[in-house]
Image (cartoon, rainbow, N blue to C red; front, side, top):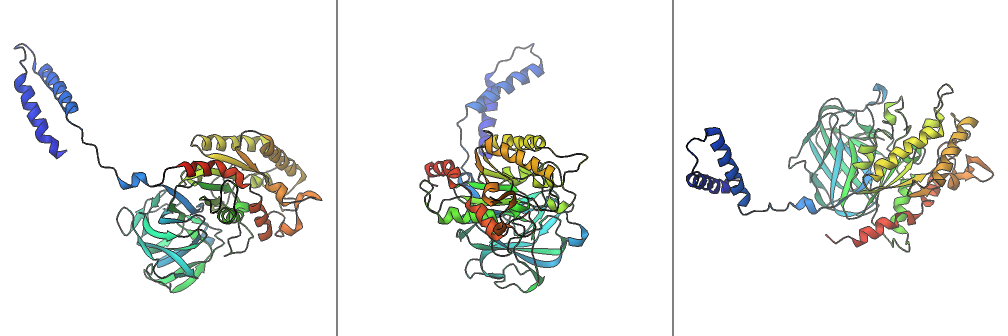
Length: 449
């Protein structure tokens, strides 16, 4: 703007000198005419386009993600005092640059991250030599996140392989309560002795935790799409073996990297992001805050805000059915109406929606024959309506052919509601990879960057 000021002043002088106003014209009208002429002169000045910013050409895809909830009740609230947490996450897609997303969205006070780093995990809490990278936020080594807000780090160069473990280290100065957390990590994470140990290859571990506080997403540079799986405990992986990545979305991610599909080829570039929360519902918030806001309420944050999202797989509603009261029963019509809202909201953003049938639950604590009727009605709608862009039949993949309302015994974790590791593997294998061919073609046709 400074270089234009002399030109503008000169134009103003010339315009003023060149105009012969009638003697009887009042001053306000003179100023109006002179201002209009000056505006025309400015528009006529040669344009100087702003230089393109590098970030405008970057493409990001989430390689890992989880859904935050909270704040936890006092009995399960994690507190950190001048400590470093090292959080382990398992990637789905690879890339050469990486960034993270942190969240204070369930907090009521500002959250300060004093330092943050990322690297490949060597094992346990150790970071592989030569992979440690310092993270910044808007060019600063620390960030203070307002209550209710997220924060995204600046990207750093790091060769991130698909299906690998990353270690994200966050230094928490002062006393910090983990009010924004994913409770069912099924992953051992590490808390240090007092001090900033984000740069330590080996963390001096004080204790371990099985939750993910504050960290909600890891993105890599990629032109590939992300698949978001939205659901409850069955998507979250409840009763699968910790530290083994045996949730059904993990099995899907492995298949996308290791199976050769006629169209997708080998090593298809798809991120898989697990937004399941144990206890979550579709229609209403659960009484337990760790079960998160309803899927309808958290949809924008957990689906639409995911980097590179192109596909949504949604399987939710069993907790609505199971916790339904005789006085006010949840109907299949209620669930279908809510599903239609999710479909509309996703389609408005160009996201394809794949419906997944609800798995069997006869024998579970909140089962009843009347509730089974609702599940069957919802599953029939998912299978037979033309509103979804595709369907995954998890019910058929996991049920006992001799008694369809129940899990196949080999897939039952024992509570008759959640699969075991073998059941989750069967679910991951039941996903037709052809559902994602459209996205693969679009990604392959995109110009290289």
